[in-house]
Image 1 (tube, rainbow, N blue to C red):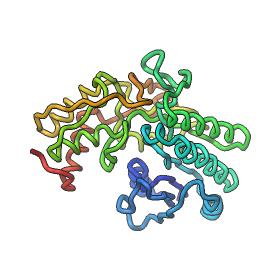
Image 2 (image 1 turned 120 degrees about the vertical axis):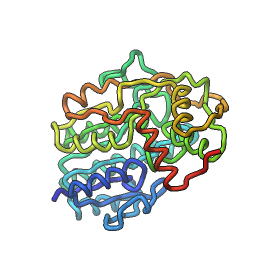
Image 3 (image 1 turned 180 degrees about the horizontal axis):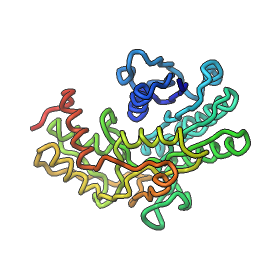
Image 4 (image 1 turned 30 degrees about the vertical axis):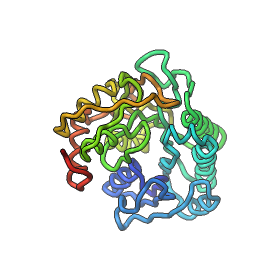
Length: 311
């Protein structure tokens, strides 16, 4: 039985990874400070250790459990919060990642799979964006994720740790909190369900690459078994504007309601679509869930749990 530690495992993406790992027969430990995650997201038989990843005790925990693989998903993920408090953002995303990497090296871990973000690229020179594109982050969040990646590569080169970096596109699906740029689908659907008017920041012509959470989980699983490490974009390679996304969300919800428009947010990227051919070639991974289907699944999950009402 493979031993796997998942940081941020009580959160949106992490809890889906936990479920997939249980089905695959992993022995799992979850580390989460519950600032965003919830114990309700986890099966009762999966041990949850409430801990900040910056805590030195993490190294003892890893040494005692001795996982083969660590999936490091714990992070500060809100771009606006990073702009407001870059110190906290860097503390969690950089120092926290260093703590995880040190713990992995001292605890005999073979591989660390690091959740990163397309925010490291900044505004692209060309589309779709490949992994070789220069890193020019526009926000403190993008800077902290780029720094975390650099530390991960350093630990890999100097300590023999196998490091896989997954640069997520805009992930969406059940359990996503309705906050931040990445949570735009959750915000749209929640507002539509509750009778509100969703807010589009800027003119709505920004384009994004939205990837369903189950596809991201599959990428993590493939990254455990394939290759010796590397950096991979995890998206769909398909672009949609925020206005176009809203039209799809409105159709799924069956609600005819125009959005409100607000000012652009600092640090937001204007255009982002990912080249995912490297992940396909080297990890054997490809996205399976198209955006209309993923939206329908997310809406059904919200309705089943009574998260709002249509009007």
